[in-house]
View 1: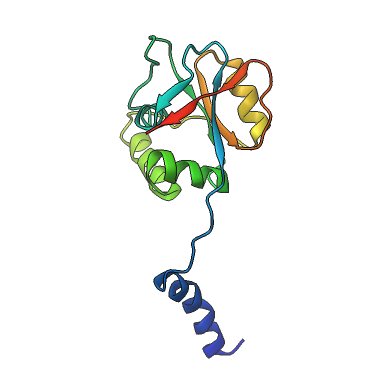
View 2: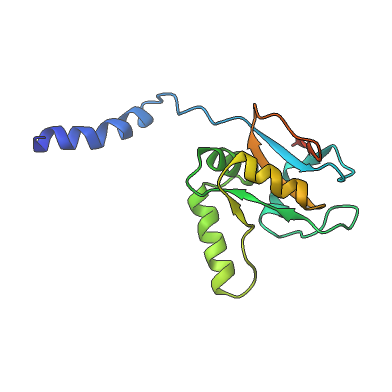
Length: 147
């Protein structure tokens, strides 16, 4: 590759973004909770606080048990941007700061929708997110997100 071609390959994505080219469509996801959870909907900020462990209990007093998808997952990117209002890298930095300051540990990470569903099913306070088209097993239900 010539140096001009290399430079062009670096500039094209930036130029397209600067000119208002459509961004990649975020993946649809479902927020899922253990079926024992009494709620059917939650505010976006409540869910964000649970995943960032700014809140550790549900409104009924039960302990929350959030679970994340892999840091490299496109689904996690969609969830982070739409619910936490931050890029995954910013959330990763947040957790690095929490760990190094001795405040808290991030939620456990699972590698697939099936693993997230199994975790949520096994934990009464479980909350996670999965691909929007996934069928939910017994013991897990969708939690509608409200602004």
